[in-house]
Image 1 (tube, one colour):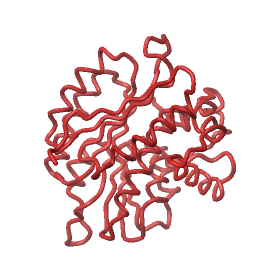
Image 2 (tube, rainbow, N blue to C red; image 1 turned 90 degrees about the horizontal axis):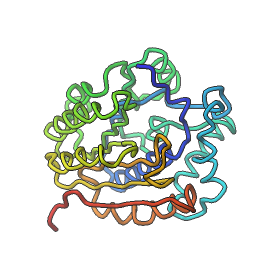
Image 3 (cartoon, helix red, strand yellow; image 1 turned 90 degrees about the vertical axis):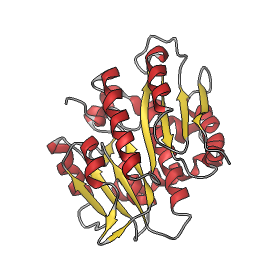
Length: 285
């Protein structure tokens, strides 16, 4: 695998993914019982936007940097606070990956498992969390980890609540959807009360629609899609937006997204952007 997230850290896709992730964590920690988070494609956990990779693409300029310049809505405050906390610890050019955000948002009683297949990235991830007993780092394939680590346990006790973040690199393009659906189906069968959050790119709507139709039939109580487009879908650019597929989202979570998505659009794509929130399947109330 050739993908390196350092080239894309802090871009518009990261901002969508990380704001939704923090909102999910907020819903989980609202209850006192311990929870568990699995990050299947974790990366290195911490990035620098002044490093050569990030500077080469400049993608953070239309992502996190644009949000800090224009994103003043209350719905964006948890994300802004998390990035500021990361920079207070690691310098003004730091940007937190999803493992860092999970560790920041979750509590002492919670547990986190981060999977990263690339040896150098996994080594950086271990360094990032050295001394944090809550976080386990696994150098392994993230899809297989869903079978290996679910349902989660703490000693002899099963952890009932939590989330699984699936954020693959999509190097295989459309072929990635088959292993994604297989992994989600297996995970939901093994841990039916877990929240499963999948990030996906929006490049060509025609190729995405069959995947979403299949996702609607996953063995989840409900399936919700949240998308942010930063440019028109007919644009010839490679990625015009991205989305989050949420299986078993927390109760009334769509209300948080109804506040978050317009705020993201205003900050990242005030002219020519769009957002979409749609139930693919909704549990009867």
